[in-house]
Length: 299
Length: 299
Image 1 (cartoon, helix red, strand yellow):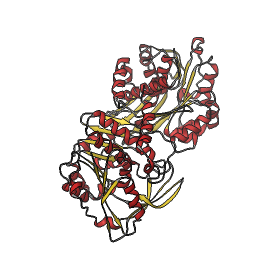
Image 2 (spheres, rainbow over the protein chains, first blue to last red):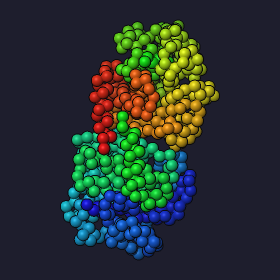
Image 3 (cartoon, rainbow over the protein chains, first blue to last red):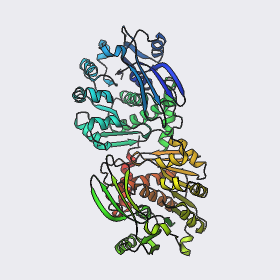
Image 4 (cartoon, each protein chain N blue to C red):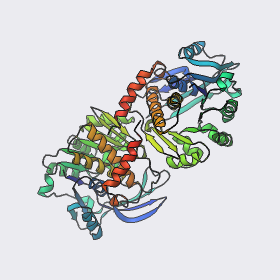
């Protein structure tokens, strides 16, 4: 099964204790695609500006990403600049330039509207809703958001949650939207807003999955080499959703496997700047690390 | 195999959003014993004051804890008063009264000196060293400490680490003693100080185990019912060390099982005030929850 992802394609400037990269390819939809592509065909829906280097489009095509709905508009690309210090668990945003993102109205091809697996990565909830309304009958809809929208478009985000199967949030976002501090309680409150499944990403502490049938918890893959965590959550979501699209079923076992693949994919992401590591990944690398990860739990 | 634990026996006053308990039985050695007793015979080495209720001694005996080296000295009991707010991840200490702990010099019986499994729970590193010097030839020595000693008796603690097999610390303590922010790097630095194995407790985020042979990571058991986390780390250590004492071997499989038992034991601890839940636990309860926990990882 194919998957369609709506999100940002960005030019990221990132500084960590391990170096700095300027205007590298980034954005939620790009990071998502880098892991989802290992499982299934990925269609990317996004906007870029006139200053977006053509080599990045070529690169995405080489990775078998369908870029037919990546539109180029007049104006500058969406740009994010951030810095990580200390334990690299959270970024300090130094600068954000919305550019062409501000007026983005995605258009899908007829083929894309038929895709059954949908991921609405972080973007204005109104744009996310617009895309969702244009889809046929999706089998599974995942949604990510961020604090900016939780604070500025809370009502729109909450309306959107009613049409979503899986809400993916980091721990801060889950607490902020649910107004609960304990994560399982937060998940329960978010679940009551509509999504059947809640997936809370805790960075270096792994993930918590909540549904009314079961709760699952997985640690992060223990990697020492944390170079740049930007996009780890989206890479996780790409592995998670990608696996489910490939498995074509949503049961406890497939969800557990999806969580494990997402975890392992995210561990590669943090080991390099931007998509340096994930763009070179193949399915065998993923399987290899999954095997090592599983070893933790054979007891 | 028996296990001997040196640590505190305290009267704890704890306030959480779920209520308050005054002067209840607590302390590192007590919480450790509550889970270790499910695996093996536990000898407790500690001091109490004249105001220590005799019913607690009776209670410990009923739990098959050897209290022959729990001495009663002139003066008040060690008392701790703390409050948890928000996500209950860290306590605000409101009051500490050292009492008889200040002049404690433990004395072991001849039988106790022969015990092969030793746990030095949080206490002055000089007292921990004193006990260790009095032991015969232990097979396995575990050590816990806390920020107070890391700051005030750093040199003594670092000397002691050379004689320890497993150093157990929470994430803050591990970072503070190693002066590394990334936890795997912190574990590596602590390992270089002597202990073959480093166990970092991350509260609701589970544990990280480090040795030069392998790194393991486990999430906490996902429980919604967090009433009072006081003693969760010691309960974890008791389950972990208790299992190893029972298994009588230290290999990858037994370490993974020990981590899992510790995790599950700790999850019961947080579900009640003090030892309310862990004192009523039996091995079957532990096994039952371990089975549920394992389910997370069958993928």
